[in-house]
Image (cartoon, rainbow, N blue to C red):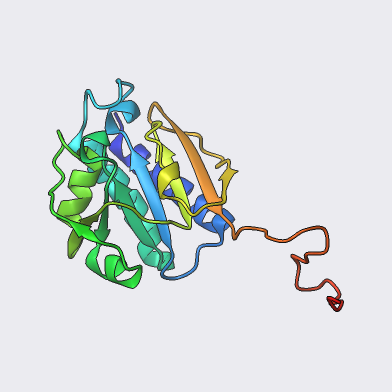
Length: 189
């Protein structure tokens, strides 16, 4: 497996999804990743710290440059909890839980992120502004309520399928509701 190619694929996907989602400084992108799937193996059966390191480098190169935060989803053995920087948990009012992800309980990607973040904590949930799922890890539970699928140009990382989403605010109201700022304003009598 060419780790530099994986890093490049991931950085391109992250940059494209960040653009499509119009992520702003301080917003959050959730990442779910099966390093086993990247290697062409069954999810949870062949995790790789080397693959996790390459993916982490690809993600962080873009997130640091653009200023958005990243939340790494753990595997189902930790109930899909998330690894975030402590300042992200504070900023979004997320409750910290007591666990340290390891490759066999949390997954290789989350375990690697936990060791690389400056001040890592684990939280049970988040409502992220965008997300990337590498290898069918099911990140939807950690996105804001209205998730809109986006299709990155690069649809594989190694052997793993990639899906992604951005979010948008809920559209509320009825036939008289206005959703664009340029629309005329009529009185409601």
